[in-house]
Length: 282
Picture 1 (tube, rainbow, N blue to C red):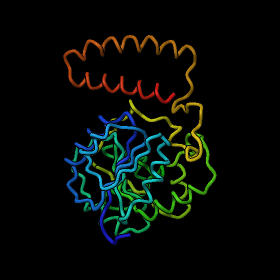
Picture 2: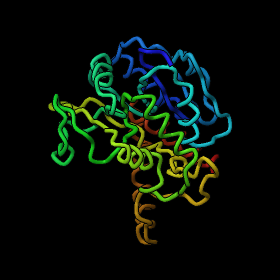
Picture 3: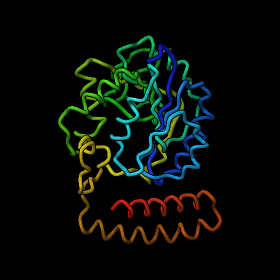
Picture 4: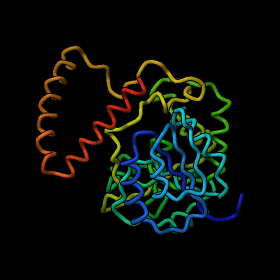
C-alpha cells in the first residue's frame, strides 16, 4: 500500500444511472481534490456510457447482481491508498468538501475508522454526546456509509472479519453497518461525524430507488434472503387499501404536472425506471 493519497470509491447498481450522474456532477463541483485512484464498483448491468462521467482507474463489474455487501467486499481489497472516500450513487453536495482537511485529520488520528459528512445541519443534540474538538464528534450510532473518508486498513480488517463471521438477515442487527459498528466498538476504533454547524452539506436523493435491505444484510455474501425485508412495520390490509387511493391521486397529479415541469418529468422517469428494475428483480 502506498504511503499517501486518497482513493475515491464509488458504489452503484443497475437502474441508477441518472442518480449516479447527478451525484457525480455535484460531487466534482464540490470537491476538486486530486484523487490518486478512482474505483467504480457496479452491481448489475448499467449503461456503460456513464463511465465517461466517472473516468475510473478500475471498474469492478458484477454483471449478475450479487448485492451491496459483495460489491463492497470486492472493492475493499482493490484499494491501494491508506485512505479512501466512500461515495454511494444517490447524494447531492451543496457545499465544498475540504478533502485535504479531512485527510489531515485522518492521518493524525490513526484510531479513527471514518469521518462522515452529515445530512443534518447542524447536528442534533443527541448526536453531540462525545465531542472530539473542532466540531467533530464520535458517532452515537456507530459506522455510517454516508459519504465519508475512511481509514483503509481498519475497513479492510473489519470486512475480512465479516467474511469469516456468522451471517444473518435481520434488519437492525445483521446489516454490514451493524457489523462494522460492533467491530469498531470492540476494537476501540472511533467512527466520527463532522458537525456542519450552520448549513446542510449533503442531502440523500435516493430514497425512491433505495435498494432492497436484503442486499445490505451480511448473509447476502452467501445467499440473498428470499422474502423482501421491510424497513417499516408490516402494513395492515386497511393501510394497503389506503395506499391504493393515495397512489391513484398522486400519479394522476404527477402525470399532469410533468407536462410542463422538467423536474417533475425527471421524477416520473425515475419512478418508471425503479418499477422496471423492481419487476426484473422479483
